Structure formats: structure tokens, C-alpha cells
Length: 457
Image (tube, rainbow, N blue to C red):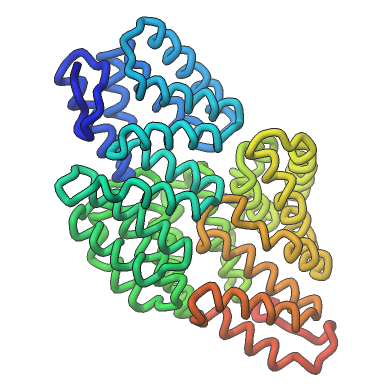
């Protein structure tokens, strides 16, 4: 039996197939656009490789699109048929079981299968990355960190994936507030593995959370090769750079990056939509005219109103529908979120119930100018907003909307308390957004709510 580059036995029958499998694993860790090409080569050469079909299905599910469930289900059928041949290893069977759990709506069950793999094979970096990715979708930062730290002793710089693993560790450290350690780990990851886009972006997160945008721009400048090879993740790294320019008040540079890099391909992947909508909303909250850019976002998001795969995706679609004033699609999505929340059986559905319903109601109210209702709903949701998934940086748009709604509704003390909490979670650092809002609160403390004005108004 052959072994892959991480030392695990695989039921592949030729050295060429093993090479393609190894190439796929390394490409996946690098967020490379070549990942599906390598996987396709494996399955074409070895249609009886159960683990390959399982990975295909897991990748389909991670796309967070309802129409991909059919392809994932077909992959599971192929994987189960391959298992019937009796050639698969125990490790490969666990991957198939992970896909089974995923399709049942149990992301925690899929994670448990990957953690079982890691217990038996701690150097299986594919399992590590999948566990990391699913936990990210669930907003489980503590779990991301504990998963990686449980296997770190099994890695040293000679391991082929050491740099990528350090990059994952860096991100989990940043998301759990260990900013200095996160920066060190991320820099080590990129120095060891220059195409580690995840590790590079983890350091960008550190600069975002420590309000050091100038250093963040310096970090990214000249390292474009670390993410130019990526799939749509490359748009997200450009988004991080745009956030840094936004923090410095360089709005023309933000809009230029939006047009030239972040939305140049006008894709409809929910992660790309989240980049675009959250950036446009941040700009508008700062009083910047974004022109007709909402129209493209709203048109795509209208088509996703009935999707219901991820609450993280839905909340960003709602931002687009608000910005583009698509009232019918917005009402449809709000209604569907309520319906999904009532089931509350799967990991996703529980998140539609909490914080999804309150967050969606808050966004709808904000778009209608009902800032009191917007604040009350968004403030109710904010303590469990990590459950929608994503990162602190991605969810910060909802934090900003909550604060701005509070100020506009006259809840100045409440808005300041949220600003204080936001600042404390950023190591006591104050970014440009916070500084501006603190000043607005100070300037308006003796005014009636009707007299309050924000830059965006």
C-alpha cells in the first residue's frame, strides 16, 4: 500500500495517483486555485478512491450553497460504493463518515470525525485543515486553537506542511486574543512557506485588531505572490488591505482596490459577497458615496434569498439588499430566516434561530431608518454573534452597525459601552472608527436624539 506525503496509508494504486493526491493536499493548504484540478486528476485515475470522493463532497459543502448539496450527496454515494470494495483504510473511512455527518447538517459531527483522524494520525494536515475550516464556519475560535495545539508536538520544520500548520495556529491565536504570539507564528509560517496565504492573512488580522493599519499595509506590500496563486481567497486578502486604507481615511484607495481587485471578477461566492458588502457598508457608515456599486451586490444577493445554507452568508446578502434597496427580496429572506430558525435541528438552523433572527431584524430596521429597533435587536444578538462564523474582522461590520444605530437612536451611553468593550477586545487599541465615534458621542451628549448626526447622514 502507498503512503501520502504526510505518512498516511492510502488505497491508491499508482505512484502517479499518489503524486496527484499529494499535490491536491498541498494546494488545499495553500488555498491554491489548482486544488480542484489535482483532485479531478486523482478521481479520474482512481474512481474507486473513497477518500477522494469524500473530500470532493466536503469541499462542495464548504461552499455554502444549496445547489452544491446534490454534488456532495453524489460524492457520498460514490464514496460509499468505493468502500464496498473493501480496499479503504480506517482513516479513509473516517473521511467518508465526516461527509455523512456534514450532509446530515451536523458540522460538529464532521469535526469529531476529523479529530478522530488526528488522534490516530496527528501529522495528517489535511484533517487538521478541514477541522480548522469547519470550526471557522461555526465561529469556534477556541476549538480551532485547541485542535491545532493538540497536535503541534507532532510537527517540526521538516514536515511538508509545517508552515501551513503554523499559519493555522497563528490565526487561531489571533482569534483568541493572543496577538503577539499570533504575529510571531504567522511571520514564521510565511518565512518557512512563502505561499502560505492563510498565515500571511493571520498577521493582517493582528494588525487589524491592534489598530496598526500602517504596519499592516507594510506587511502586505511586496508579498502579493503569497496570495496571487489563490482561489477566491485572494480577493479576501485584498479586502484586508482595503480595510487598512479605510482605517487611515484613504477612501479613494479603498474604492480603487474594490474595483480593481476585490470585485473585479464579480463572482457570486458568499465569501466574495461578504467582502464586498461589508466593505461598502463600512464606507457608507463613514459617509463615503459608493456610487452604483450596491447594484451588482444586490442583484447577486437577490438570487440567494431562498438559499439558507449559512446565516453568515444570509446576513451579508441582507446588507446588499439593504444597500441596493431590494425590498421584496429582503422581505423574502427575512421570512425564510424565521422559517429556518423554527426548525433548529441542525448546527446551521440553531444559528438562524440565535443570533440570526435578531440580527436580521436589526439589519432590516437599520435599512428602514428605525434606529431604535435596529439597536435593540443588534445589541441583543451581539453577544452570540461569533456563532454566525467568520472572524472578528468580518463580524465587525455588524458591531459598527450596532454602535451607529445606538448613537443615532440616542443610546449614547450604551453605544459607548459597546465601543469600550470593542476596544478592550482589541488590546486597548483604538482604531479610526472608534476614535470618530467616541468624538461623536462626546460632541452630542447634551443633544436630543433628533439632533444627533453621524458622518454618513
